[in-house]
Length: 356
Image 1 (tube, rainbow, N blue to C red):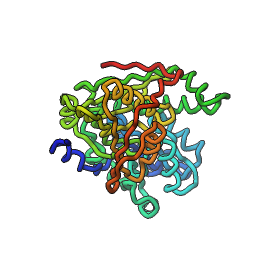
Image 2: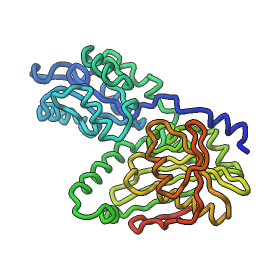
Image 3: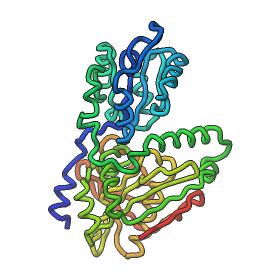
Image 4: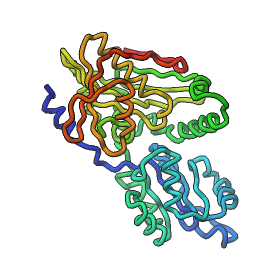
């Protein structure tokens, strides 16, 4: 039986907008003046404070500017701001095209982007083409830090180093693009260490953040608060597991979460999610096979819930590849079952650790 509390929790879809990246225009937005017309442009007052505060909160930043690349990036470097901006799009394409490219490169949803520009035409073009984006007039820059969507409830260790983790990802991607060999051979060069452990109280802020921020690689799309997660962590009828990953380039941070409801005869995976940054690392498969091993050793049936949110089909495919079969369907809710006859060991390219 599912408890009343759990029914209430599971009836709550993801509804709070989460901004993962703020994208800046340059001319008369980041700085005063038009770079290709003015001999000297100057940084907007307090702009450094805004940029650094967003960065410390784990909100990524980029640039979408119609400008000459070499001239504009040189000016950004002169102001010593280049380190804050990931995948800057400085070209003569539409702002909408640049914003879509940034979302693609960061592997985040369009609806997780805020765009700041001084030109009404540009803001209206983005609103028309990409209405999911939060468009902000440059006149409102001094209010940005006070906007609720720019204030995550918790600032975790992963938040504080998020930009650095993305910079590490860029290094990995560059290395992968230059690598000659198979995917598994490249992954072996990374010297990955994956750890799955029972979530501790100090993990719960990050666990809540994961449920809020993860859309594509989330089996249900539901959010769980710190208190709800702590309830499951302390419950004898639940297992709450958290995964972390690191490699030779640095830490990916806490990147995966599993919540299992444990009944005497059966276990049900109520939630499985992972960061999009580890999509190609095989983490989901390892996490699933670990849960399958636990279920088999406890001699119970293993079920799993999946709720489609139009963006998480990859997780449906992950269940199917892991040998889960649909046994029930009710609207968007699919119940899977795995007969536990085919459990794979972790691949050789990963050093896999389990901490109880």
